[in-house]
Amino acid sequence: MAIEVLKLKKGTIYRAVLCKNRQRISKTFERKYDAQRWLEDQSRFDRTDYKKNLCLFEASRTWIENYSKVRTAPSTHQGDKAMMESFKAFFGDIPLEKISPERVEDLISHKLTEGLQSPTINRYLQCLRGFLNYFVKKRQLISNAVSIVGLLKVDEVAFDYLSFEEADRFLAYANQKYRDRHRWTYLLYVLALNTGLRWGEIAALKWDRVDFQHQRLTISRSYCGKSYQIRETTKGRKIRYVGINTALFPELRAHFQSNTHPDNLVFSQNGRTLNLENFKRDRFKKDLTDSGIRRIRFHDLRHTFASHFMMKGGNLYDLQKLMGHSDVKTTERYAHLSPEFLVRQTELVAIDGGRSNVIPLDEFRAQSA
Image (cartoon, rainbow, N blue to C red; front, side):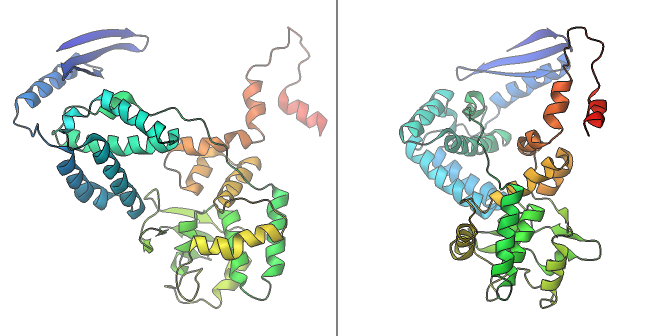
């Protein structure tokens, strides 16, 4: 065990270092006292009678029942169980402390030979990392091998969205098609394109969350496609509010006239929650084709809302709140669509070779108008 002193531009920090099971474990602190306390805690941990021989099969049952089943969404829980079976088949019933960085790298190689892509392998690694962290926090495991190895690098995936003209043409077609029957289908398209709600949030929306007086929707529920139930929470586990704009308000108000019971779903079929796969098969795909719009996913209507929000002058902070993103990094992929973004960024470096007649950006725009 040792404490290394590192002098950086921002000041001095202290790195506590120890070796355990041929692994170098370190943690940095702003104070030397904290580094010393951490090393003492690790030493005390080594002397305690913790369950050194906790094996994968028993540990996986504990984690699935006590953590995944209790703290995650049903769809995530089902995925966790499937991935844990994969880990058990690969590692066998070995002690958790034997899941070393080398074994994790072997797992990555194995998944690559199975033909899995980096994003999918990262989901396996994230599951394994969460599983091991559970026992690190319970002081039944010293370190997390996945945290040492890290995730695979993933290329940024482009998203698709409809142009304003495409979206307008699609809604014009739906407006005509559903003028007399199944008007709710047109309303659903208008809602998706003007709010950016996820399918699960649309399917779970009830009239008690529609406030016509203040022209806003309260998004606090989501439909789970695994359990086939409406959950009293959203994907990000936060309640958010989305405005009802002038394109949406009259259609939503008209639909409300025949659905006045507050417990009723805004969208339903024979009193039951809409199923996405059935809706795509029976309506969405046909409506795209018949309106002359290229094939897109239903989720791309959400991307369409976000993209046009930024292109028409919206800001990332507001968009993050409207979309319900937990991490602003998710929202940042729309930043390049802002009409001001690239101009303002390149204006930070305006090299003119010493000329004195450079026109400021705002003045140039005024003269060009």
